[in-house]
Length: 249
Image (cartoon, rainbow, N blue to C red; front, side, top):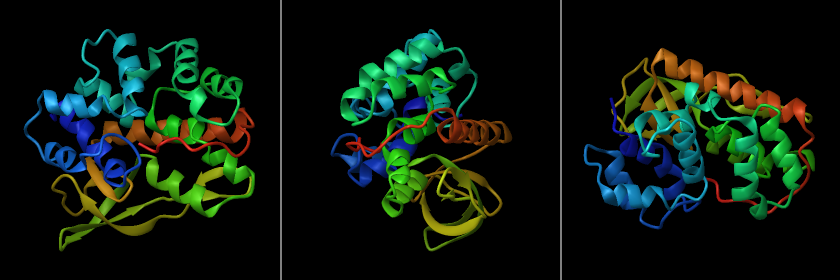
């Protein structure tokens, strides 16, 4: 079992190190990600993630957790799980419009409709539905939106080898058909790791980092919530146009 704040640090560090979201002190976050120390300093860093923290507080409040960094809450946000199913759709819609509508160029009504049409308080909902990148794809801009969408989503893969501090991981990338996002044929990438990994491990990835090893239950959750939200943005609402990019944490 991993303490919730440390688990948060493992997933939040990669975009933070790239300067996309959260506080400037990525070195401190990396130290926390290595564990085992979890203290008030880590909680203070977590509260500075303007993308993730509002979802954690929503998940915690809806499930009567006093601590937004409780392990079950953190896992639900990054990977998925039953805590997300206990959040009423109207509450999620009101929450994302209140927290994020003023930082995108699209319509708050479109954002609310995505939440009401089946969105969940999951990181991949934020990446696919709240960020402007799917709208940019539909406007004809492909290379940069695809790079960010595929890197920023939480994805899964299998470790093929470990050497020189890097892991070779096979995973399915996102593909853009010209009309919708799909998962493409598996490919291999060299990534760094926040945790020790072995050949054969199934792991979660965020940007160019392995965040954690996944159990079968966690893999089913991540796969299910990913496919669910791809279906949502592909078919439920024509989420429009170029928008002002949010931070990508």
